[in-house]
Image (cartoon, rainbow, N blue to C red; front, side, top):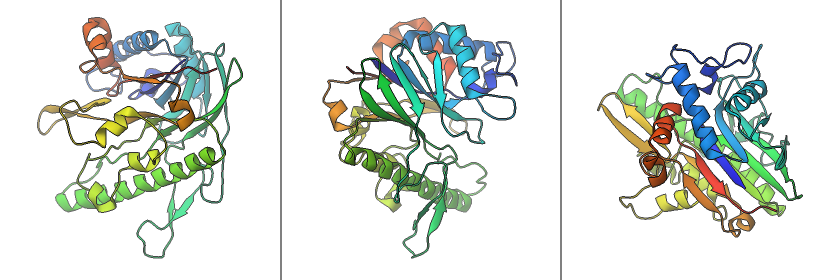
Length: 331
């Protein structure tokens, strides 16, 4: 079975108020890419993935007249892909939802949010002392993680969590002091979300459940200097000592020239692109023992993607993130 995590930059911009595809020459949400080019590129990427399930990060909007489920079903029909059924969880107000597209002939998935004393439901508030000052802060997810109960066609049950943790982007910071304040505040909120997610993970592991955590954690060990203030990255918190993802584990080792990445962004100041590992597919121990195979569909780092010129160009036009796939034997 192939499961994929894919952050599609401004997927919402490709749909009108009635969730119909807008494949025209107007600008998409991607800089310098029109809607027809991004739409056709996404079709090609999804077809190449041929996934049994895709966790879509930054899925189309829900609200007012729009429906994430309807939009993605429309896209699946247009693309002619197997992952034609859609499930989502709590909608948010960012126009960047989290949803799972899946092949209903292979598995069934339902939204099944959990809660405990230590980890409330993800659409609620977490009270946590972020400053160690004996005062409780209140933390909320801007994009509540998607919690799914999954059953394969042969009856295997597992838990699936799709997550998009808070970005550390410095929107609105106009000087050095503002950058420092915003950077620290954003990282504090992100780490609180990671702790919240980790508590849910521990809940499932304690119950002996097979678990996959996938999505954009907007972080990785050593990505910025503010990490030293807090000791650990969000990725390290979420993984703990039990979840496995070889790309995340690679970053925990001494730096080498072949650091993996799942995204590529343009820095207008330096006029150069920079790369980062932000997207992960993490497995609980029982699933990690099933000879899983991970792959980052990076157009410049994966030889097969680079050799396929059409796919390479489609990956570049489709999003600023690249899919991460997991091939694993599930019964």
